Length: 254
Image (cartoon, rainbow, N blue to C red; front, side):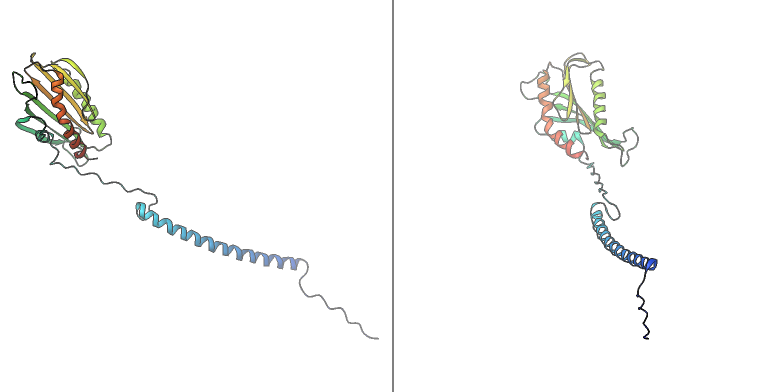
């Protein structure tokens, strides 16, 4: 009798061992794929951050993203800003300064000593104006010129400060014993008001213009012992417009 060999036992894993093995291999494979993804994603982020770093340095310096550079403050040409001297040099009007120029003087907005970020320039002078056209019995007219300009302010709103000062001066011009026959808005610089009438003495005529250009205010008053029409006074004042408009625009720092 021939002995029958027992059938060979099947090799491999069965049951829960097989399931565990499959699970383990799958997990290792998943971790491997995830690791590769992390490496790729990390490389992408590194490249992206490098690009952003270069851009941020160009815009606002290293380590600052999107910061905008601050524009430097424009310097004040102190020696050039003297409106009485500027008016005296205008050739289109026959004007000669009389006596000494008062100023220019510098102070703060509150009236104290000036500071680097708080500066007001002011000055005044007297002159004689010889008008064009028909001669007047008294000859030339007397002129008074004064100016006040906010050069630097610790806060914004220099033009608003000048606008408030214009209104304050205009209210003073309209009072003080003069008799106003005409007044109103005037086409001069950025904004202006004019006043025409009889001066404090009770005889003759006067013409005052209070005007603003940017953060500067200028007051021009003409007086005559004669009866002069408002249009004749205005014609002489308008000869100052172009030069004052250009110089006050350019000499007051932005």
